[in-house]
Image (cartoon, rainbow, N blue to C red; front, side):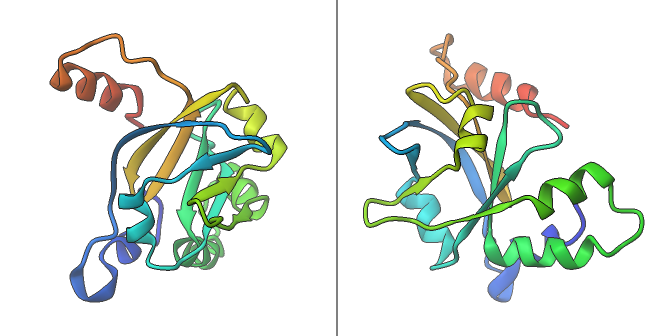
Length: 153
């Protein structure tokens, strides 16, 4: 976990802001994708910021704006990885519309395939958006294990 994220996850007097689970979303006209109501509630009015995910190709990371601001402060550390620094500086602020959708900028939409669907994975303090993964296993435990293995850093 990058520097600064631990404080954000346990914000608000010990109540964790954890994004966990998996959701699939249609890509609506204009490059809009839905954020689940469960995750939207955890944002508590915070905006989302989207950046290229430097740890995984073809992935975009969403993080609450408050976490993004903490990451920018942590970035002043001279040991902060250069590729993460560049991704954070190129991040885009996203706003939820009235239907709980965010518009992905074209360059980020192209990263995740720009097809008709995407998969959103909760990665504790952030949400990772990847090209749609069609579940090929029906056993929930096997699916969870396959997803965990795919996103292990």
